[in-house]
Length: 114
Image (cartoon, rainbow, N blue to C red; front, side):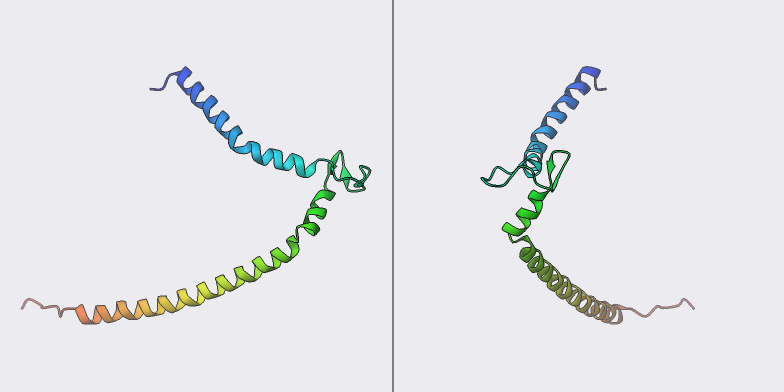
């Protein structure tokens, strides 16, 4: 049986590791929603909601060419899914043929006791 102190220590260690794993996500999110530090950006932007600067996402989308990359990713995904479906149907059909041929080949006549 696990003692109460050992269980508490396990939870403390788990929380520390979770914080260590999630800290980079939190810092990226804070930087994304923080004010733009570029010169001439102007802190009085209309895309600021309760101190959160959501206009940074639109700027990153434009500067980073995410729209182009999203379209390319969509094309690759559609191609891969289409090819996978075609190949899986083809393999399934051929597998069924092999299985039915093996059943015909390996089936033994049943002998009845007379």
